[in-house]
Image 1 (cartoon, rainbow, N blue to C red):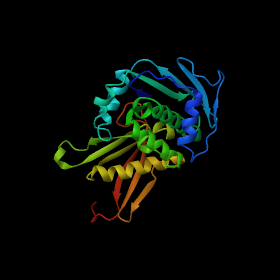
Image 2: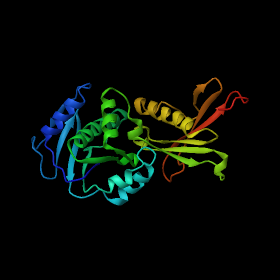
Image 3: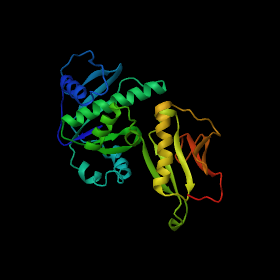
Image 4: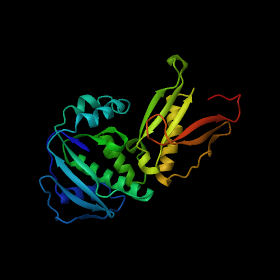
Length: 265
């Protein structure tokens, strides 16, 4: 959802022209569907590389219940998200018409939604973009840059997937953290959970985000019990469980195993 300061209605031609200009590095086939090229007052349908997408122009803010958690979770990457998004008065919904039934379909759908949402954001009074499956918000310039990177075949993991850190010990002074992803499940059927470990948040993020990026690009290439090699002193063991920190959400748990007990990171 693209959060805009004012109500916005765009034509197919405007969106297509912006996409072809901004994402020229990735040739896109963009076609109108059914109703033609002009925007109806409330929306239009288009095809991007064969993926059917709707663009709906809504003359009211994104519901608070939908976006408030995302604003709280976006404090690291966008510390002023709450204050800035409080100014939005309307939004544009971009979504797939039909649910994808394969990893490739999900990946193509996410790419299509990203390209269209970025074009809409660039053409409008957009303040930010809410990625609903990750329950995450990105400032408009950051989202548009991520879409431009996607056109260069760079997976926008930090746009499609949200990373939350959890306290890994009852005593915060222990410096032990855990981490979970939100938004990876549509791509691989599971989220990731990094078990508590005395590593810096940056080190944990490198490990879990790198794993998420690999899985988004390739699909679920891991099996229960597999290990991921970090270096000669460390590997990560993968364990599948049908429910992790969140009720009803299957996860792949990542646990650090040190192959050289004398080496600490």
